[in-house]
Length: 450
Image (cartoon, rainbow, N blue to C red; front, side):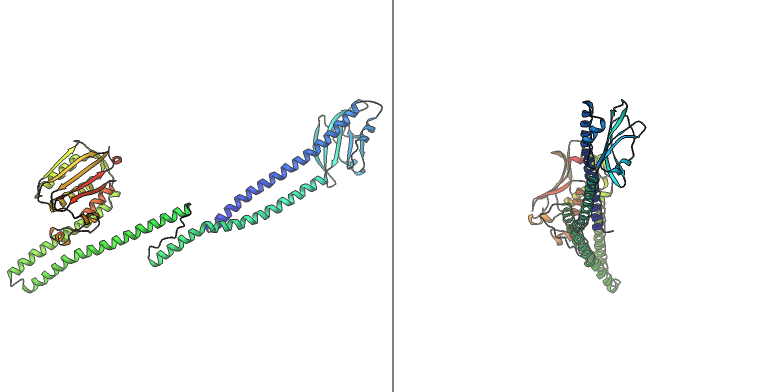
């Protein structure tokens, strides 16, 4: 069953139930009010009769009752045996209406020969001193005929309104589901054409369907951006791997031709193959680190003191680095919620970057700053040009490809560092001036720190 049909049936069913309840209530209230009104009129007549009987005088009960005789009904006195001692009416057939005696006053509706009658009964004292019921019965066919007319009108209007509701539900269902059909059509186009088409949004509306459309468009933009970055990444990675493979292939061919007869060619080929193989290994490690950074969200973070982690990492790297590393921390203990291996990977990337492009001391500072944990790594190296700084954290971006190739750079390190920072709920930024060095700053938010 389609959503439009479900909306139509749901709206129609709900409103039909409400309509039936309303019409039934109206009918019952009008019917009860009409019967009550007739009974009150007859009760008023009975009160007047009792008042006249209580006055005494020479008039008999029959004479008094004749005075109040109604045109289409009967006035009678019923004794304890249920027999009618006095039965006055202009329609003789009404005398056969069943009688009954009760000690209290009562009202009711009875049926005789297919006709409806309103009845009121009041105990009074007969001429002979016995207690009898004064009963006034009036034909109510006219009133019940009006009630039947009202019932017919309500039934007719109910069917009419139900029909209108069905049409309105169908139209309303179409209005509600029209944007959904646009979503479906757009999604089918995306599937068939493998495109990233977006849904046209009416900015004047701010309902849930409009929000769904805007969310869908935002998702499409992110998917398209991710796809383009992936294509660029594959292209850059292929290019980076193609160069060393070409060099290795060329030297292998050279070795086949001259390796056995020319020792200098053999040595050159072996050195070049070793260098390019090392570069390929480094590239592969960088790609694996990137994959690890992308999956960081799947790892559980733990609260731990990061001061000894930074200290042990610096101590380990200092043994192999050409530059001295000096570091300070304020305070001596800083607890943050981190994934230890990824945090160490971030630190190694930044320190390795500082050691690679500098020939002087590397300074590391760890401190609490405005409710955040701030890790800064400063070198006095070649710096980064201003025009390159906005792109320095992009995947595969390198300031100088020739210089990066000589130093073994791939353009992945800082991108991985940014991803790790973001997965920890933090951020990374830089301050750099060409020829005067660079400072990278990693900040963890206060929500991640205790």
